[in-house]
Amino acid sequence: MKYAENILETIGNTPLVKMNKLTVELPCLVLAKYETFNPGNSVKDRMALQIVEDAEEAGHLKPGGTIVEGTSGNTGMGLALAAIVKGYRLICVISDKQSQEKIDILKAMGAEVHVCPTDVAPEDPRSYYSTARRLAEEIPGAWYVNQYDNLSNTKAHFLSTGPEIWEQTDGKITHFVVGVGTGGTVSGVGKFLKSKNPDIKVWGVDTYGSVFKKYHETGIFDENEIYPYTTEGIGEDILPKNVNFDIIDGFTKVTDKDAALYTQRLAREEGFFLGNSAGAAIKGLLQLKDNFSEDDVVVVLFHDHGSRYVGKMFNEAWMRKQGFVE
Ligand code: PMP
Image 1: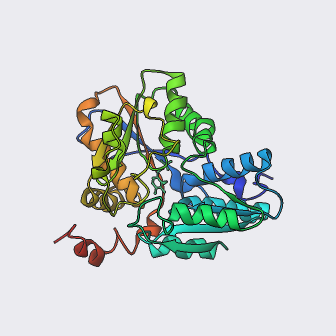
Image 2: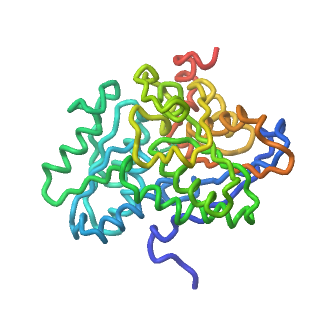
Image 3: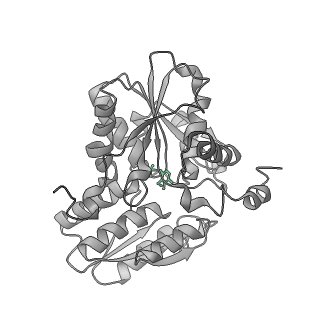
């Protein structure tokens, strides 16, 4: 018999799938690292498990303890899987721009969810960063994950996602393109791939309303770059420790409208029912087309599943309200 001992053992080893339609104008092979196949339907399962196991080892998390995190949903789902199997209480603090589906899913998985306003500064006591920190301090036996600055996040991708992509492409990968939020994915995968072949180019996909691209290009943290946006999961108004700017060759920014429209196109043209950051990632890759030539093997990573966006990018009324469709 061949079976996993528990759901956590099914994390990782996701497929790499060739893109056939959306990338026809490109000269190169484009392969999608399809992270939706993780049990929590996102790449974040990998780092959630790594972070919890590193915290256990370091003694931050004791049996029966409480995990607290500020999460846009996918990390919460990964943490929920780890909490259920390992017997922890989970509190997720989420911003009010996240989809209702994400909140409902976390509750379905037994997490307690606190919803905080999006349009306040990170240091404001009402922000989800501040609320998560406060709860972790107030609750006995609680431990704050802090996926932004906890380097176990990057480590998870250095140890699993990066090696998988290297092996699946037989070491032929030339470019890696990925949306950047906490930075764990780009930094871990990027560092691993460059350790194997320093010529591999690593591109981050950013949103309008986020500080990353300008900071990477100028070293200036420009507050004028910060404003609300609808794209979920990528871009930040802070500089997380998990973003390793040195391993990133460049950023490209994608508009909210393009991210939403390309999320729809991935579903309708490739059969890839994915989240909003996947639309941003593929549009970002297409914006970079002048960088690719015939023999290149470009890998784009798709973070999460479309089911979490049925009330948004897959809802025509929502798309009209945003002005993304006529
Ligand atoms: N897309 C989605 C849907 C996400 O949830 C995240 C995580 N914030 C990302 C992209 C970005 O990944 P990372 O945090 O590893 O940079």
